[in-house]
Amino acid sequence: MLQDLLKASDENDIVEAPPYLSGSWGGVGPPLDRTGPYLRRTVSRAPTATADEIGTAITRSGQYARRTASLAPAVRADILETASRNATAHRDRLARLLALELGKPVKDSRTEIDRVASTFAVCAAEARRIDGETLPVAGWNTGVGNTAFTYRAPAGVALAITPFNAPANLLAHKLGASFAAGNTTLVKAPPQAPATSAAVVALLLDSGMPHQAVQLLHGGGEVGAALCAADEVSVISFTGSAATGTAVARAAGAKRLALELGGNAATIVCEDADVATAAQVCARTGYSNSGQSCISVQRVYVHRSRYAEFLDAFTAAVDALVVGDPLLETTDVGSMVDENAAERVVSWAEEARRLGASVIRGGTRDGATAAPTIVANPPAHASVVVHEVFGALVAVLPFDDFETVVDQCNTSRYGLQAGLFTQDITRIITAWRRLEVGGLIVNGSSNFRLDHVPFGGVKDSGFGREAPRWLIDDYTVVKTLMLRGLSVWGDSRELPKENP
Image 1 (cartoon, helix red, strand yellow):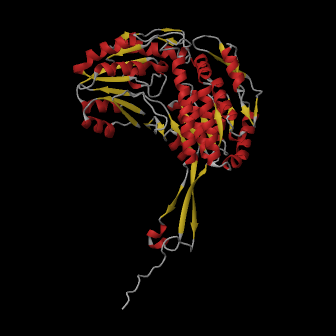
Image 2 (image 1 turned 120 degrees about the vertical axis):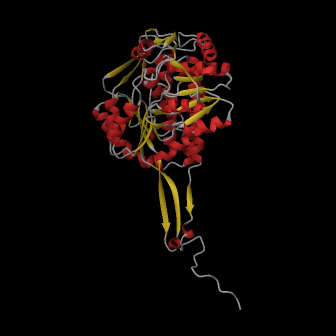
């Protein structure tokens, strides 16, 4: 199947992306076409899961759970390491598929596939180190004479609901970690990236993953809601908007959840910062993937004494970005996911202008391609400051006092990551302690992530941490073994008597 998907992409044919159910590729539901946002034509097609197919997938996943859990961790790890090598081997062709389906520049798409390979390798390493504890029960009088152990057991059936903005790597995180933990996984692919999602699943199957470990379904929110409500599902990992995350939690009921939701990321540039470097970094990471990242640079607060200098350098760096065909090696900024998303950038920039801000660059679009937009000094109640734009727009604002700007950053309902440019260790520690975020990037923008480091937020940015080691905690349950009347510890309750 992987070769079929990649061949169609190579030849600019419509990529047929079937579901994978009960060990077979194919579905009978109504087709859902994906329009490539740059090409403005159908690039992929996937059958929407029917009610019967959803029911079958749920039933089979419950039956498959024991079979998947029986695989030794070393076997799971070997398969994931093979998948890592195969992702590297197919890097360029997978990147092309990403670029066609999402308008992401091919050089950024290659980076995403590199991260897929890395993520599978990390998942393999984490599979090898799943363990348990010998508990110190004899340290308390009530535990004397007993022994207790724990181990982390597979949760059973996991549901992975993935977003469109990084569909390959985020699926690698969710599915790779779930398999490393010993679960069977139901995957609900994003409608905007059905072929990319099918390619990642096919790559894992080609690498030796047993068919019982994964099932892939396509469709919209109604498919996700049905899967979330299934009693057979033990744990759900979802990445997407805060509104959809709320719907997932409501449909799931009393299930374990790991939700990585929206962001409105702030980066602070202090007066002692290297302004030229900060401007370059913010320009590069504010518009990569057309700003479609939950940690993309959206609000940049610059000390007033360096504000004009930063804005000039930032504008020059943005002017140097190449906007255009995502399949060209020179392109820095491709298309957004669709025209509605690009229009959001345009309308929010215009709103900020009406409220007194200056739109230094951009504020226009060509179809789904939004021009990199700079909004200078918008008021605190403007949408570009309050809400998540998830697009090619960066707002630049001055500040006078460090304590005050930290408070300004914290007014957001989101709290995923923040960036801080400074050489002052006191400010670094203060920001780490006081900023209401899941992660702080020092001398870098908010938009930086390592796939083996915990990633997640607070407030409306969700809960749980997405990285293989921490996801495995969510994907497993602690099971305790208690041995009554049998102790590996000393079990005498009497002090030894001294010899006369």
